[in-house]
Image 1 (cartoon, helix red, strand yellow):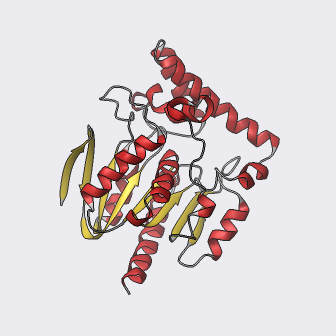
Image 2 (cartoon, rainbow, N blue to C red):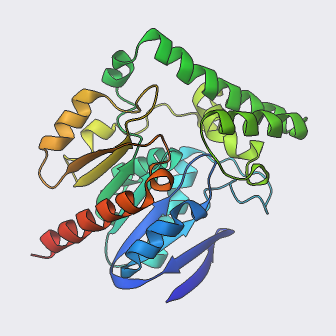
Length: 277
């Protein structure tokens, strides 16, 4: 069963049937198509909900939004698709930041979280776990994309070339025409304080495994991680939580789709069964 909704000028697709609703948030420079294989694996038993992050629908004008505004949009979508029951969040990349923030602000609307490749990046222990070289690598690609966002308003051609160059360099294989500078505003939020910046975002190490169960899946074939080992160890020991490392880069669900989707399905089946007891 498929249903399309429009909420605040955002197209929302609901697929599948079942008593539990899974809301999927993608990151940079992706679209809801990131979850195609995952929806196919879950739709027999779960209602799968996905939509473009604001500004990522290239058929519409740029739409940068603050963390609070994105959370308001997610709340409207969650209330529309699952008005009476909390949802499961399935998150990747910037979808993790926005999704973790939503879970922290609206814990009553979230039953469990599946986070993919982005962990406790808002915690001091994560920054201290990085070497100087790793910090420079992270700053290098993020500032590059933040600058491309700034340039996009006046030099969109150059900004697009910059964005697509970095996407290729980082291993993203989306068609170039599906990647533009308008997707970069979260990086400008982080480095230039656009849309109110990212100060005060949720501490994931105080959320997952403490107030709600979580599955964390990450790719181990990267020059740096987006989590600290201390947090992974903490989450591994938390009741109802699980951590899985796959032999992939950042786009885990694209590089090992069968393994990734089997892991997600198995954990959801176990978690939802446990919560119903």
